[in-house]
Figure (cartoon, rainbow, N blue to C red):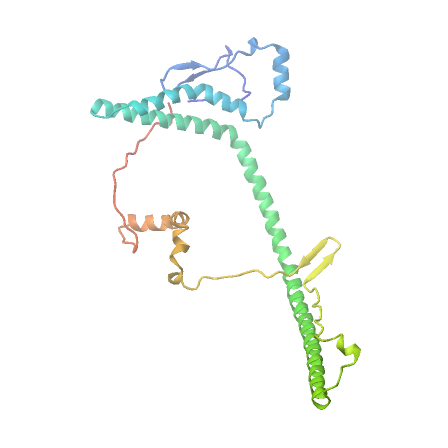
Amino acid sequence: MEFEPWGQKPTDDYKATHTSPMTGEGENLAIDPREIPDAVTATQIATRDPLDPDPHIDKINVIFHPKFKDLEKQAIAIKVFDEGSKTTALEMLQQLDKLRIAITKYVDDLTADHRKFARDMSAFKGAWIDTINRIKAIPKEKARVFMVEDKRKKDAEAKKAADKAKKEWEDKQAAEKKAKEQDPDYVPPPEEQKQRLPATPILPQTGTTKTSLGKAKLKKVWKWAIINFKELPDECFSERAEGIQAAIAPWINTRIKAGLKVPGVDSWQEDDLKTSTKRKF
């Protein structure tokens, strides 16, 4: 079944005849451009967006939707009870396959150039981003190592200052206590009364650097590695069963088809109906 791409020149009689995948009968689907006023045609050609999917969607709906609705009603109503009804059901499957093939071919042919363009541009972008990230990692790691060490030194200096302040306060407290033991009427000097608690040094805001383009800072992030799958809790798997099953399905399918037993997996065979449909119709 062949379709004309949007905008293709019509046939000699300005009519395009398609063979319906439902009935096998010819269907006249094209519009005679001679029936459209020149001004309207010119306006449509000038304003039509080549990436606007609506004209193509409308065309597909006009061709297939009525037949599809009929088949849906027939599929719901059909009863398979003898050879004749079985054949009817199988032909219905094949008609739906033809519909799927026809729509897929039409859309794939229509979007082939766009998909190739998107793939090529994505590959181009990906190559650039990979290169940028690879180069970016070099100064990033060098700066990170320096900033980590610089922060360690500043934190150590701040802790040293805090420990010194605490020691000085403790010494003053001990001196006051000793003075009171020797003289019950002892009163600390006014300047010492104002410092009843040790001054807490303000830790420097290490780890953040401003540049002409922005700022950068160190940030703690969690890292982890699974060291024993057997010790993982059941909820780790049960809450993600669908995703895990999809991820390991190819491995399990390969082993089961080879006749191998997979521990923890129950396998059995069921009858499934497979149909084949001619691609040219």
